[in-house]
Image 1: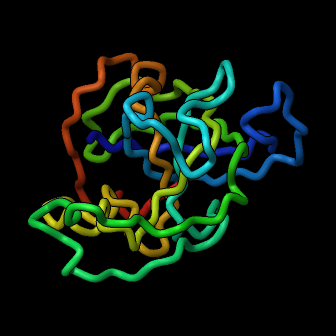
Image 2: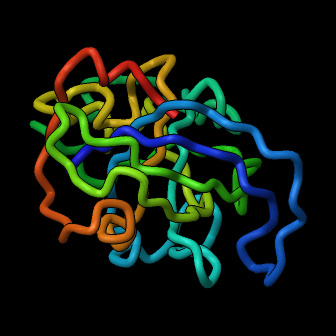
Length: 189
């Protein structure tokens, strides 16, 4: 997965099944990190839908993001739930609150970690359709990846955005390459 630094603005709230948003006062978060996930390949998400409303891209908020979290998901990190870099078969992922479901954010590309991603200034709207639990084996078992690519970097605001949004944010085809060069990894939404 490729990481980009983004600016995040809360654009409104609503439930994913509604056709309109009830907008609230905008809150800006100057920097953040976006990772990417293929929600189209999932049958369901924490919020019940696998995509956002028309005109938005689906996204998951890390449950330990200090500014955008709707609450920490249940569960504990137990390495015995890992089989190599993956969870053991039949692993039951933690339950997550749905208080973020339907919230929308304007995400602006401020450049890639290490400066290798184009499209600075491009923006999209994402809608929260899922949660990215730090205590899920689907994330913490990936020990060959930096924490901020696992939704597990405490104190970091992070959105896991659908891969379909990558072209809109960067003007480039999604390549699935991981890039993480400090100190940017701690500079978030």
